[in-house]
Length: 178
Image (cartoon, rainbow, N blue to C red; front, side, top):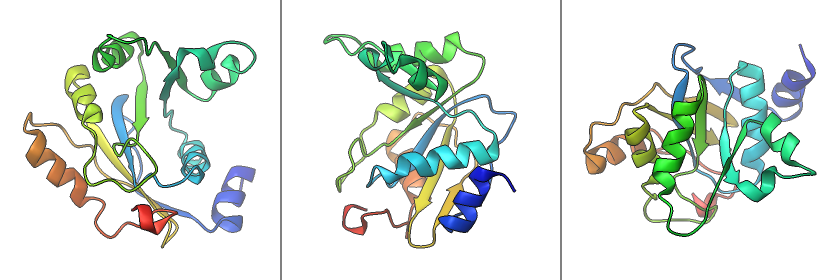
């Protein structure tokens, strides 16, 4: 057992249910609930164990010296967040420029409790013409669940209800924010 698996399974006590379909090279991966910074390393362990590249976007300033190389190595892609730009289009263009790109996003848009998800993840998937892969981090059972790819139907209201159903009963690190 490798070091990453030892830490994830034995020390932290987590398990993984499901896997990423290796034939799907491009997708929007939504991770819910996002209630803590701990989600970051749980995600890093998961992708390393499953040997699956998972990406993220960050403001372009993060990708300059001295840490730019690290963020790129971690799967990051710089995003110009200048006012007046269409962020959905800019991110969808990243999919076009890469052979493999699985963009991880938290649809809540924050680690605080929210009544509704932001819709950017949906429009990015729709514009880039890629599926959405729902992933749950359940701290009550210490389980990462990777659900099958979901293909948007262009009915965001119905699709959001279907996607949210994947997360019923899932508890975040901070349960009050779930």
